[in-house]
Picture (cartoon, rainbow, N blue to C red):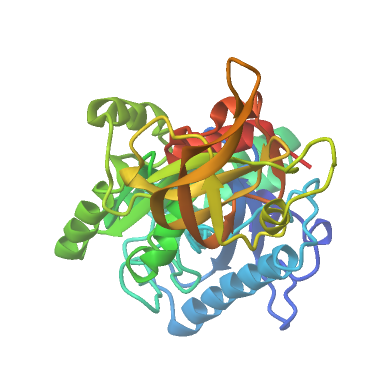
Length: 426
């Protein structure tokens, strides 16, 4: 009866979600708006519910709690099996939900709840009443202070007025059932969000212009794992959730993050873009402790003699991403002391960058024609750049408009990525 009013019929669900592969059967299963934001298209998440017809007022038993956690673990694995094997169908409402974020290695929150029937014995009221049960189930976790972790499972428990549900079911009015379904789903979502607000503080992060967020999260894996996730439309903005039970740990982490990220406090459902832009304007230019430093653009010529059309060994080494040095024949137009990486431009495009292990001034011989038409050989200044490891910007090359004008320019990591994303193509 309850499932008809709340969940999606099992025959409309893919195998493994409600009728699970280990033989367990979920009472109520549906997709609905996620808990973290309000305005992203297709931000649904799985909702897992179970009806418990205990004596009115009784709390849950251990067996029920452990079984409900297993439901969630099975759903998480079902989702991972699709996404990690690259088989997700984005037109399918169940498969397009992605629980795992590859950058932060965090997991989205799955709402998991129990429903119990209650009756007001004094009034025998038929009012629509759905309220949190007085005693809520404990949080299941493997690690402390990791909300965005696949082993952190939140359970909640709600009481519904049994007489109202019975009357709604008995009247069998499709419009009334549909209206209550939407109403009670919204109530569950709001109640679970309120539970999260009571237990956690939420923040939004955006990396400073000189910081690569992905590199930072990898380097500080143990500090940020399970605390960060990407729920926003703008994938350069991250959610940070901190358990209020660990105030000193949270203070230390926030201080470290603030040196490399713009950090603003947010409420669940709030779009943090405006608040982050305000902080970006207030901080201005930043030299972050874990910043990427500056990127130097350099043209790699394909031919030593354009007429001969024979590619140089230097060009081939850059094309194959095995270059160890570059002689820059034009002096950069800026301070090279903060340059940490070289962006080589091949055939007018960029695809990655090299770590700069050393820069020294040198000279090269060049033939020029004097006023009398004579060819003379002179020494010209140059930069000798020693290169280390190569890092791709993405899967493709990006064409740089008027690329020779970029030769010798120095830019931030953010500027490099904006250029790459703007012009990237297969």
